Image (cartoon, rainbow over all chains, first blue to last red; front, side, top):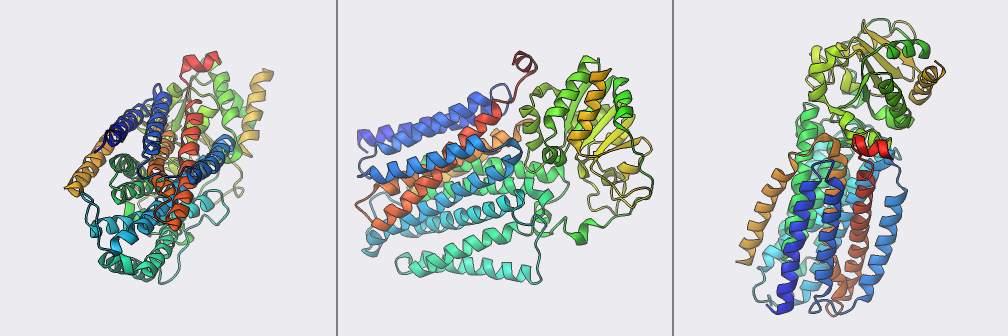
Length: 473
Length: 98
């Protein structure tokens, strides 16, 4: 190696250290922001180290053009995206990482082809079969990440129906698809120089695979899918690292791959379901979700004024937000109400279920946006043992994550899923848009519970009404 | 030998990643995910090499440039959006000052 090459490799090691330190610091709210900057610095180091490699890079014009266009799009999107839309934008960024890895694999295939057909392998380089396998994997994983993320984006932003999409023969189709992908892979690795058409077919198959893997998954299971796609985008970068024998790609790609796996496992555990069940069952489609016993009973409505009296007399209040809070954009008024209650002498906490919202930690981000300090955010395991001492639990746009059927009704499709036990609080106030009047068969026995009061209407409007009662008094 | 070293690095990095992430509190899952997502934009290194190697193959340069565009979106957008989110996470003292 020349001195420049040594310098480049050492810079890559520095970059890897910065990534690892950065990810570690992302684990605590106090250091997270610096951690992210450290990780960004690592990326800058890696990019500069790559750019000085004049042995390979002979012309900077194409690079400059690409970087300018990409930076413009990325920066604009990052500035404009509202916090409620974060899940779908993370999906889009994921997808662009995936497609980039696909293109890297493809470009490297183009570059290597001439040398390979002469039967020449550079000294010290891995055997052709190894590199071509890596190219195939980079293109395959990158492609399915890209198309899968696009579908996830569509579902999350409700541009396409977020219900699970199932058709008869789906499993047979998927099995054939997988067989075709393996077949193309074997043919491609056997003789990469002659197999360009097979390679192009494989790209198409990878894109179809990503779509097929994402469409059967329902809206409520999106946190799992996003975590999984996150993992894939890392593994795609990792495969691209094997293609160009580059350690910094392999290390960082693996870190991301592993982090996605960890989050996926946490999400599955929070729903008490196996990964296979989430991926293949089409859970949440009409057929399965209506299972479980119907609960009969009368929901007891409450007015904003009575809610005020109840809250005014409470010394301990817990808010339980769900995706409905994001839809109603109610996080700011929730925070304001929390402040008023705290000034009134109550202990105020926000209990967030691990799978509330459309991506892991989504509710926490929205509450942080509304300036809720992170000390007030409680996790499920923290709040549940104390629930009996809570005067009022206010449920805002959450449903499954507070459904006692998960604890008690063995026939319920969500039986076994850990929930926030709001029904153990002295009083539960559920904010809900509407419900069929009087006696109704509901899937959530919480709504007709003895100590439950329903505050009907738009969450934001209802809370504002309660808040104005406080201000008038 | 190179091959074995690369695989070795890969295996170690996966285990390191599992250790590193498993202790992150639920509050930070979204920023962690988008921050990790930005790191996966490291594929930009491969993209830069492909887009700059103009002597080898014209098609390779075009594909490489496309890769540069998408990887840059991933990197720039990912880090910025993560920073935007993390800037909002405040402790009790900080939020009363603001």
